[in-house]
Length: 368
Ligand SMILES: NC(=O)c1ccc[n+]([C@@H]2O[C@H](COP(=O)([O-])OP(=O)(O)OC[C@H]3O[C@@H](n4cnc5c(N)ncnc54)[C@H](O)[C@@H]3O)[C@@H](O)[C@H]2O)c1
Ligand SMILES: [Zn+2]
Image (cartoon, rainbow, N blue to C red):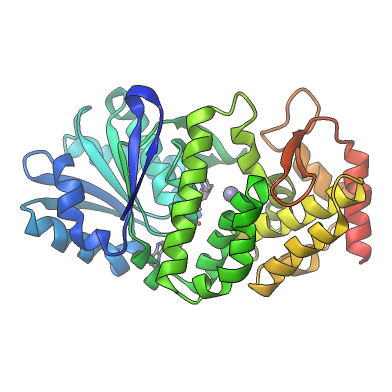
């Protein structure tokens, strides 16, 4: 069992990572119940796969759950389901001092976190993430959001959970493609500032994706520790430190927009291709050894993740992709901040990137 603390003064919280923790949820979550009841928000697929485990474990500790089951999928992160959820929480008379539980992937975590941040001006919540992406990234750090017609994650808040319970065994029921997509965010931590961890990924990534529990637990512990440290330093992305977590995301966002934010390209898959592109662009600009960029692509390819435009199913021109980037919310004062790399584990925030260079690079990539 590993416990990592997110250091944020009186809002500090623990992240517990333990195989089988869900079956011992009474030990970990009973203290968040009021009058023997805990409201648990989840989605259809997670309810079918994992809710009984939580319910049984809490019942053994004398806690009954009040489940709210929403549809699975990105479209649940919407005004509509925010309203549905808030109305249910009000009907259940959830109080400001109460804790509600988000059991699911990033969609449920982001929606529940946002609802908790505004219910009666803010109640508490606990994250029980069940996708690899949520376990290594979205459940930690307090970013909450819904999507609107104007774009993804444009409405939201910073609202930190009170506790995060991660049981890697929940991944046993997760689709292999979803797990692989989440793995891209694991690799990201190595590429940002930890070359030894990237080497670990090269050696252990295939076993992790085959379901090896020691490998996935080690990867989650490492990723969570990295994210917790960054969030502790720069909770609201003001110093530039937290922005490093967006490695591969500017390119990735353009690929996601081009493929219509659909199942053609999952978020993590777009991030994988985006990281490979960021490294090759850095090499093209003479910042990074091309051999390092090739090593990044080779690992992503080895585990079956997209690593260039064709494997991301994108055939658009550089100009079209740059146009998507200009709609990115991270655009500041007309300059597009870009995460580039001087090598593996040497990512930095560049503020002087010419978009014409990016477009020319993407056209070269497209030409092969
Ligand atoms: N808040 C943040 O910091 C942050 C960071 C990264 C991503 N996100 C957000 O996270 C969302 C994506 O999250 P995601 O990739 O976890 O997707 P998701 O929540 O949609 O989960 C993917 C699919 O897997 C199913 N599922 C989840 N856990 C399962 C399990 N254990 N067994 C069987 N099925 C399971 C879900 O029902 C869903 O159909 C996006 O909306 C993104 O914007 C937020
Ligand atoms: Zn991401």
